[in-house]
Length: 113
Image (cartoon, rainbow, N blue to C red; front, side):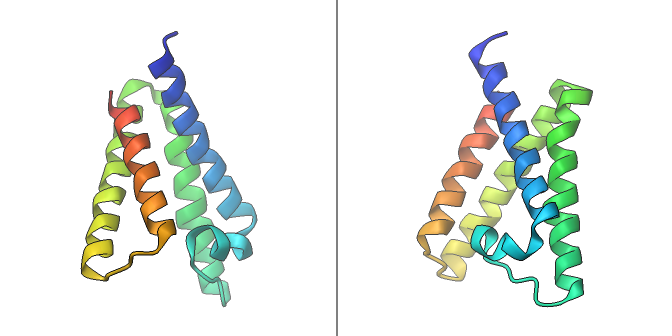
């Protein structure tokens, strides 16, 4: 197994861990993603989208193989593109946005190569 394949697995596992964190501790999401779960609907959205979806996206590459790693990688690049749009259009220059953008680009590039 080469280094790139190990990095892909680490990226997928990090996606699962992010999802587990959001799923199990939606009230802590504000510190992590900047969203507050003020009501039950907000808690449900954090658990389902940032929890369930990220868990599935991170687990499936281990089950389905290389194509799922590609899908996850392009997903991260799409998130990065949308975030960059928001940074520019919304003038959302928070340091955490730049850090997230960098992480999303790095993970996306690792996963598609």
